[in-house]
Image (cartoon, rainbow, N blue to C red; front, top):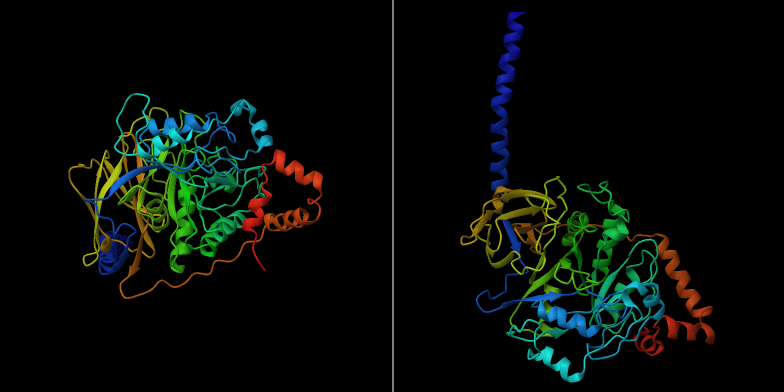
Length: 486
């Protein structure tokens, strides 16, 4: 019996000793893996290009906001924005100095906000003063440049029931007065694509899990149905469907969207499409204007450069709030921060420079207003560094990790969080194997076809057309211009 226990003791000792040796062997194997790294930031001239502050999703009382157009423009101008896209529900922005075609029934439903008050667009002189930077700020601050007006901003699917199924469109004459169908992201994304514009998916979490205050979804993978649905949308509209929101407003209803985003990336990257991650305030009032925004590195401030930045991912996404968790349960911030953050501050974290050493498989980051950096590979946290000295660079050696598709990171500080775009990772001298992403079929597929049929057959009588024009903001001339030709 003594020999038996002695044998057990020896065996356990060998197992305990072998465990770290096995782990070390695994790390050594990973370290022998060499990578090719593709970065959206590789062509940025960090010494000459400037980071421009952009709000790509906000509202006025032209749909369901509290602020008039002129109040919204002034408020963003005061907060130091360089770029403003007004994206009212179902209502195209044809210029801050133009009267939008309203959807009266929507403004009436949101009467507590809109009060059905006048819209108050800018005069032409005032409009030009904001564009060239000669307009006065409320506190008398002198600005270095003006603020550009992003044309034809709109939030699509404005009247979907149960949960929001929204996406924003830009640079395309499409969507005025179109109500949308619950769950149908595909039709408006394709419509904007055909009209020559770009789209960004909004707060997807409101559709994927309308019980947004529940903890049931936090830290868990999202159902493959939704992953395929949105991955398919990006694959079907390459270059037009440019990305999705990963942190909106206070992040209350987008806290799981970054898990979904990482799952989508593992479907799209092998098929050579990379959707970018956006942050935005989705503001309806003055208080929330500065909750979240994007910082675009561009050689100059123009709509041409902005569109290129949105398409190519040369920007960082910034928020004052973050209450999500990663897939493995590690919180994105060292401490949960929501109530005490100073969302009026512009001292949010920002990446100021990046260097990628493809020969040695390292990524080096410089930044400001941060103390922690977190790295995510293929959807899981692989490394986190605390107590960062922002006067020094932070470097990660990717050879230390087994990575198949992408790496992204975020830096956090006292006043918020800054997300990078994903860096595509391939093992050296290999290509990603294409992944099959099936087309999803759901109730929206049926409703989409039904509504289209009703619109062509039943909704064409003069009375209904007058109703659509007067109360729904329907624009038959725009529809004729954007209708597909045989």
